[in-house]
Length: 99
Image (cartoon, rainbow, N blue to C red; front, side):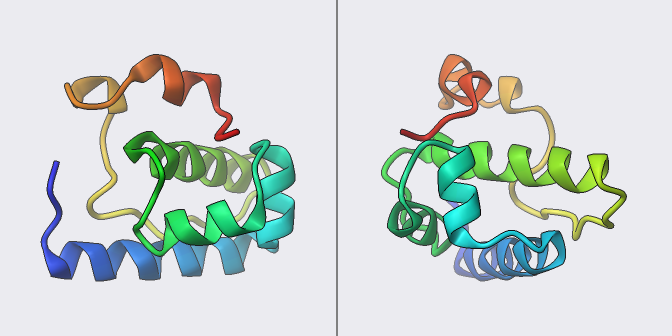
């Protein structure tokens, strides 16, 4: 799935807003997702090591925010069921860890 420049910029902003709303730091996300803050930063800047990494971060944020009653800023490009995207390895996404 190739995103347009507008979709990339929107997704970066959506990640930024959702992370801010969640109250989590990049260190917090890295700890939970078994990776480093640099890998998280690289991913949310839309340069992930694996395409699944952004879905893992997205899914974690959406669940965390829902579980804590925090309103989510909807993702406009990373939407729907990741199982529907042939190019994603659903086993990697389901594992829920980046590292």
